[in-house]
Image (cartoon, rainbow, N blue to C red; front, top):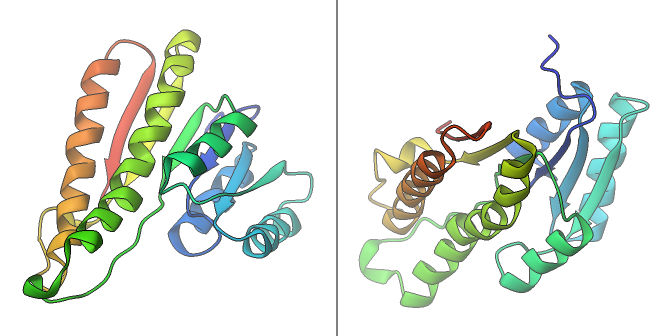
Length: 184
């Protein structure tokens, strides 16, 4: 299938393994230049090599940065000031009884699961609008709708992703930029 992504640059957050890796690999297979992200250089390098080995000639870049922080996001946008496709896949969870979840854990999950995508979308959206083309995806979860009792804080962040993506989509209407949230 030709999704017409040749020449497009895609940043996939949290893409050294799992769903993020599969997304990065799929985008590389479609001809997009892919930026693989993870917190550790070794894992980023290994993921880039795996994708490059599967798709010789693919353009694959690595970005070792913790995008759950404003500082990590600044590293990303400084190194890659423009992307046409942003896949906000970075996420974490921690099963824990509601009564035992401390404030710092609620805040940590919100920073990782929500603010990482908010910060990146806020930066890249303006350039996408200028080009009249761009794609922003948030990888959420069915937990956004079916809040797991052992992960109320996780469910809250996934519901927040739905709200954020819908609000950005409304603000970008008619610009050639699409914003969606996927709930695997």
